[in-house]
Image (spheres, rainbow, N blue to C red):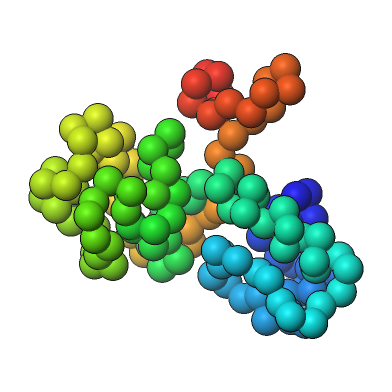
Length: 143
């Protein structure tokens, strides 16, 4: 998982650039990175990828990479598409959130700045911390 995390966050490291180029891993944080023909290291990363993917959270910047309904960007909520009967890839629409999402989730969304070109790129980070060997949400631990 540590190597997978580095693939996402250390994009300027030479070894990361080589792996990303070799396996066509570009800007988008893919749901899966499984390849038919790959090295042992890539197979190991792909095996741990679902756990890594489920524990990452986006901080919205310019909104270019975050998929509003599919990605985890609201702390302690997870992907918003789990709350609605069908997916919608439209822009951030607060009226739509209020229509489909529980009020608690809407309040969490309101506390997050909306995407803006002035903020810079979206940033993907680890959404959970280890406390006494147990993974807990960073918000729950006071971090």
